[in-house]
Length: 303
Ligand code: MF3
Ligand code: CO
Ligand code: CO
Image (tube, rainbow, N blue to C red):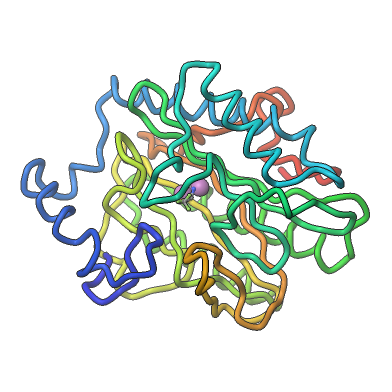
């Protein structure tokens, strides 16, 4: 469970008690913890539709994430595709964020802001993080793409990160504690000589972007007291660094998060639901569904 002095789950960089703590406590009083996280069958249908659209959008932009394209162009494509399908990009206006997606290149860990001046080039790795609101429900997922000829070490990091996310997802089952996710991810990542970012976490998701609770991708004694129940929906989105786990936030734009040691960072994200027997990935893309693969990263297929 998130503590008063932890960083808030929303990624504002503020302490939880100074940010969303009051709001969460009001929400819990209304619905009673931890059932607030358990969706009805009808709500789950809404979550499936939102996840499916988000996956469709990820497949749509896949072809455009190439050398020579600016991250602002990707953002425009995301915006136009979403709006023309009658939906809304969730990041737009979120705590003052002005773009329809996040684009995080190389040593950027998360929350990179799309820009005209930022042109993808051969050898880059870039995470594109998409969140869509479909009829009031949120779908949130991301992939790290390889641009052209990528170094062996960057390719290795991306593969490890994809595997870390899948290990986290596979650990989910009803009755397990939330901490099984960090336990499945962190020792694996460390065994590969990489590190798990602590500051940013996965999150409950439903009819708002970031709901109670935080999903730690590292081992943390405070995440033990949430028991996973069928109908809970949340994201698993590990950020993995080639170097140390520490990160810094850009002092000027107040969003862009970078590795402190400037090492490369990668991330994958899916929105999932706990089922009666295990886990359902809500944000699979059509390609992932049709191939029975969970992830495709330019050239890498990871099951
Ligand atoms: N999509 C991100 C997540 O997975 C959050 C982005 S918030 C933004 O939680 F404001 F930076 F866009
Ligand atoms: Co998320
Ligand atoms: Co996201």
